[in-house]
Length: 326
Length: 240
Ligand code: SF4
Ligand code: SF4
Image (cartoon, rainbow over all chains, first blue to last red; front, side, top):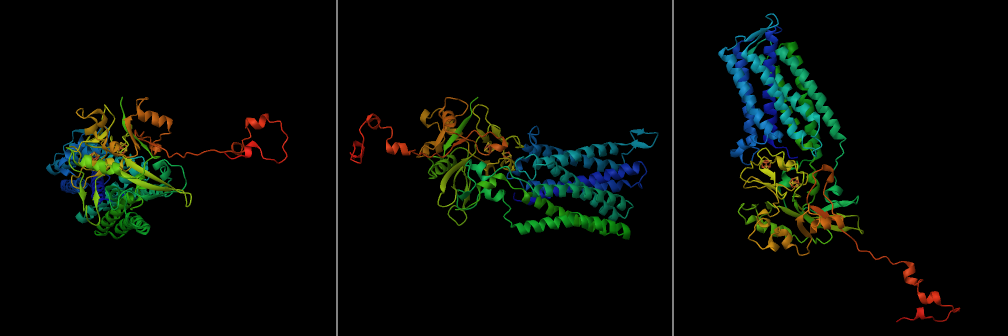
């Protein structure tokens, strides 16, 4: 497939936005039960604003993918059958919850509604919003992943690993960003977020390596034989029927040589996994305020490469029909 | 239920592209707007087509065979392109099974083209909506046309009659009989899309001449003949 930058930015930006929200709420959960230091309301409000900005950025990027962006609202109608439609619905819901979560924190509407467990777990409106937000963030990760995983003849994508990758890598970059954000503010949560960021990154490494391995030995079900229905081991296209480009030659081919592909794969394997993890550990040891920021930035660049490769790696069966210009 | 479809006879297709040009002519002139071409007279022309004729070479020289292969939307009975469309712009008509795109609803997200294994959907470069074969829906449903002309433009244009058109759910239709009796097959059956369009395979007409046919061993004259021959001419040796 041709890697479109609109979709690369859409998926990486909203992934980081969702992940940052998950991180904020994890922080709140831990501080409610006094496992980490409590943070001021501004920490959550600003963090939510950052998460919302990423989600909006992703949404804006997605508009560049559409031929007719002015009609984008129509995309919410077929949620019964289309994962794309489901994503289109869940994304604004996510934004709404992140917005409310930030506003409630900022306005200080945090009086407990009920208190559970002998006064140990006060449930306030932000807590409820946070829990809802976690569910919606997961739903959004699943919707995004299923857009790709549900196309069964894009065999490289059609596996549960795709959903795992979107979920864990988005979460990892969100927690990285939370660590960077805490480091910038100079609070004590850097190590906490950093630890979770490393855990999510390692989970992402597991699913990403699994999908790379799976795809390396993937057998494509379609062949020229099934494509034109002629049973002969040697078939070659002599003409695709037109003398230059068409939508089919632009949208489904990456037009890069295998060396570029291997380079980008190796780049993301280095930039997404070992480098940020090492930087987070180093930041913890050196109590550095800048290294977590660098770690997030490097991982984000790596994720752009990862997403590029994700698209380029997928072989669409239609390519069998478009092999030879003449 | 009716399922309109094309049956394409690869045995007689000569790869003349008459279906391509007639398709473009008819569908670019209709109420749905043009099928846009860009750089039509320049180095890198590109444009929207519903139908393409491709050519394949089967086998190795010298025993090769050329297969001309017209390709358009197959109007799948279980079309994977339809449920993925987020707007409902892509749909399958209940009454005749034709898969269509509502150009007024399409947002040009291209997801349906990803979800078609056959590569027959093309995004129009200028209108930025998804286009594909409509089976000339505006011809075949037009009651003001004489019955004989209520067919897709390509079917009428094909000089070798390689394109049959009809209802593949009616067992007595021309297309159903052709599929049944001449080995009609579907493309990429592995994906369970159940294409309505079928292809008829190439067929070779071979004459089987055996040694016995040449020797006329069953010549009744020989059988009844009780003469003992010793090398002289017989009736069998006379050339007529
Ligand atoms: S051939 Fe492709 S576009 Fe046509 S109905 Fe089948 S899946 Fe859809
Ligand atoms: S490109 Fe148009 S027809 Fe295709 S899935 Fe998107 S909205 Fe539907």
